[in-house]
Image (cartoon, rainbow, N blue to C red; front, side):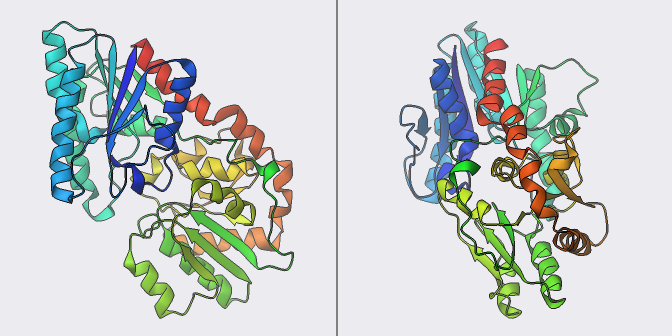
Length: 383
């Protein structure tokens, strides 16, 4: 059995590429042939997986690269259709591109199976409804012709499949984000922050207004104005100039720090040096159905996280609610909710109890990349 995974993704632009490389690493360990096809922004990075990661594209020019990628996906998928026992996995953007391969495979009576893997819904609030209609326009073809469906969380599956669930039974699997405990190893990383340092709030990943990063800045700003000694450090690609402008226009740079993305193996030290990692996501469907990698990485470093109380987090921690602090995601004033939660944590010195709560064991038992990736691979091999 051979697995071919196609994604419309510029792999060198992702803040964290673990979602792509960890299943490949596990497949190699299991002896399962597994290739990943994508595109790139500036460089063809293979992360030590030269035999597994295949870049489709013939030029660095954006337009030529886009057109050539789509064409090469069609051609490569059709080439695969001539052989047997393949599993072709695509994200929702490439459903229509592999339909010729699917029809050719069935015409030739080949034993190939086609799977849609959805890791995210549209993330732009202003165009969300339109973008979701476009997603379902493609997805209805998968519902009609594809063999299996993969989702990042149960709530994602429920949300996407609801319009179709009464029509027939579908083969599905959920595999969430995970963590590499060799990289995120709390026992190997020593906290280097000084004892008298300000309370350190931390976030890493995509930085945008839609993710709540500006709301987090404003919550911390209120705390500073009330006399709390706070440092907010956010690391990642900042996609909204409005966030940078707010920091500059309000002279917040003394305590509000934005850092471009760093190498993955540098992130554990940043987490270890923090007091409170925060996931500031507002009550928006794209985040409710998600499974942020950063959550597992914070827990693996023995940290207790402040997160919104919606499905992406409450489902994960069913029965293990002591592993996370929650703020009310449904309240009208998200700034006030985060501010109130941070004050409670600081005033009651709740961070002192981190080491007793078993975050590392929780992740080790439930959310390593090996455990999550195996769900995808086993599903591909079983259908």
